[in-house]
Length: 102
View 1 (tube, one colour):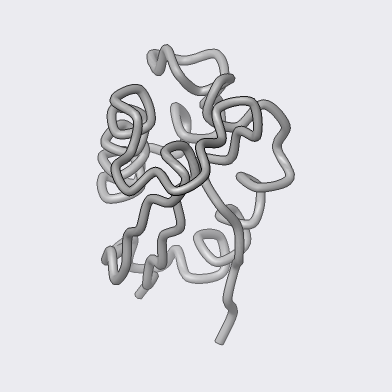
View 2 (view 1 turned 30 degrees about the vertical axis):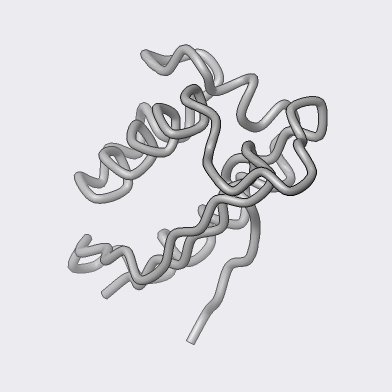
């Protein structure tokens, strides 16, 4: 089993203590990410800062929180059947997800 850990949306400049709801831009970015992960659109996903996603750079200004997604996807890419197991926004602009790759 391989587990990747990271926060796909991680921007300290947008951090809001006690925020219980995601910022609208963060929610839009999460929907963009999830659509590409589920459809296995790796071309746009890997180019998240420059592709059709207008919030990629804002959501993950540096790649160290995004890159851990690559390892479990690459290790379990035979069937290309990701399943979202958990999604949680905290502080308005941080997204924690767990995907299972079969």
